[in-house]
Image: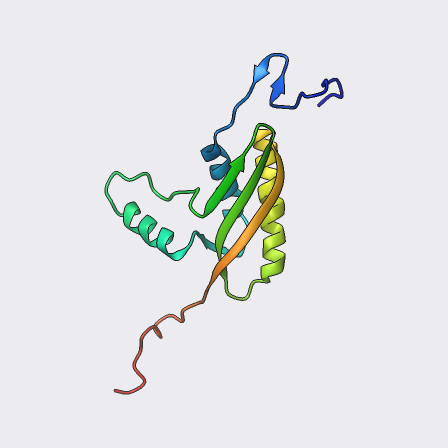
Length: 141
């Protein structure tokens, strides 16, 4: 990217016109980038995940919603991202959060040209591993 941009110009606004990027595009890019990070079990709060699970079972549905658990605010040149996640048990939440922030920021900036000013990660739950065959077993017979 050359240094020949005049004042007020960006990668999205130039002498040829404007490039507009819809919020749902940024949501999808951020959702995919977040899910790529090891340690993310799922995204969205409990109600959203339950509704999505029902929707996915309907014949002809489009499958999983990659923007579930992703909120964005998109301006002309900048974007802010909010993520709701469920982490795998045993993962360092602080490290996971930083890895998510880095991956989402890089992906959104690379694909859209927007400057990502913040990536907020909200950990809503921890997914606990279930022992095979020990789910709901009674202690007495």
